[in-house]
Length: 402
Image (cartoon, rainbow, N blue to C red; front, side, top):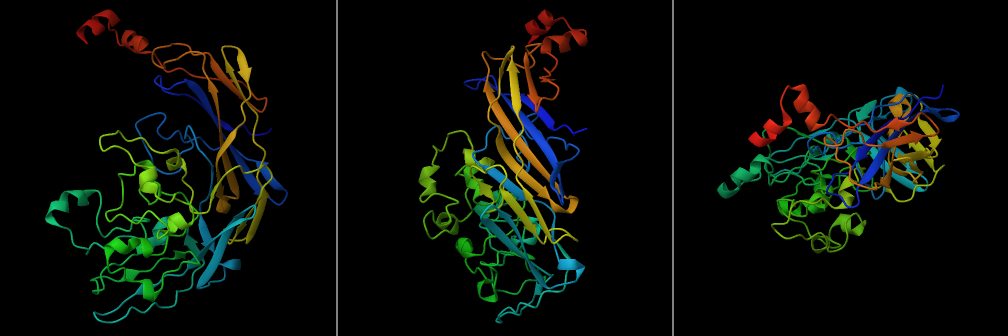
């Protein structure tokens, strides 16, 4: 029997105009020599839809996405399990290729007045693709003015805005009290060298290498952070023109500060591009069905994995007996080569004829069907009135007290 996908129905807030139902569908596939085959379903991560705001990377439930994120989770492997000092791994989607160089552990040491010497990487067989192994981090020795001390609880002038979680970011040339671990993941075309090791001026952070990975991008990482709110800028703001690599590569528009400008007292309202969580080079517009995907160096035994983008499921929405089949949007394609698994999360939106308010309406006549499977009804949560009665409280007395 063909495994079912995971499905979630969500109603937009009552204040939205027009009100809509959004259906999220997550389909899990297994990579086989014959191509992709349906696998047991993985649960949908509802993110912030079922509770307080939670912007941790990787949620399945973004109501809208302007493009498709392609994400690879796992590790880079030496070919055939034989230790190597460096290995370039890659993901190719159609004609677009993203490469990451994996390196063995390296520690750089130097004395005051000396130039740092980068040692050869130690041999490795596996390097985790997490951003903690990419270039970045924080140099806590960067001085902080007394007036700025409260701000350091959330930020620090020695933090690398593009990746505060990484390794190898050194601002001051004085020898530190501890060894400095160099990144194990790098962009082969933008690697950290001894000549680029010292930033020297924390305001020149934007000239440093950009972190390399294939995984989810955290909301605090630049440039995703400024899509959330341009006022959440780096401690030392970068240029917003061609001097910035993100502008040269069209990750940010030229003059992005004016483009994203808001009034000081305006509430936070993330730009739609904040929802894009894939690493650099892995955000795609209009991915076609059957687009070939190739993963190299990302499985411990199978050095090359190939598959084609699967067809989207057919999603039918029923609202008060009226049915429609909107075109699904592929929000993200998540590959876990270690598990030989691919997960595709789709969404469709459909307008509602009137506002339904969970917690007020006991029954909400909305349902969805995926690929001619069973109909899945929207499960309205218990009403406030029902909760009061269940607690033995008289609703009218409760309202008078309120």
